[in-house]
Length: 187
Image (cartoon, rainbow, N blue to C red; front, side):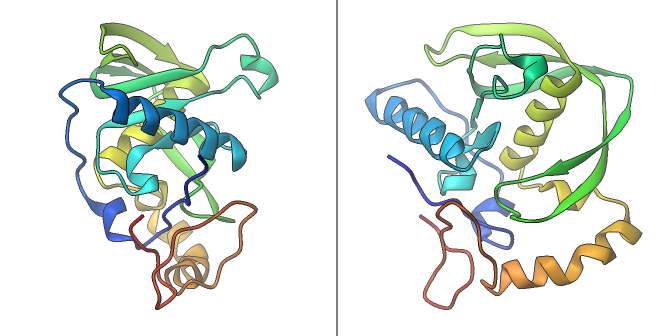
């Protein structure tokens, strides 16, 4: 089921998400809904808080990118970055901040401890776009958006767009969650 995506200024996006204690049928359904919602919005990653579930759960699928065509979709539960290497700056966007992009500096490689969709533990190294996407989604689990990581002068340039999103004056090619006042709503 396609679920509406919460937008900038929605309280659930500013909360620290809760760890999952396991995977049951409701979590499996949530994972399926997240993949369907992410793909419907032409995204490459989605964190559970973006659809109103304050849980430490991420789905990723970079296979739509030519350089990642062979990558399999991933489910990441309770992620913890163990180490980082390097730094690079890249333009990012976000399904919760429609129409806005900005440069963000992040580590270029990470070592990640996480659980998969079967709740099996993994420790892996990721670099490049995969590392960036994982870090972007982990930020959602910690109540941070990519715009919070932008340089102040760059953030000022997009403030009017952020205000418009906060006031519900934004359009997207996918369903957005809003409350009756037009501000981002909990789903």
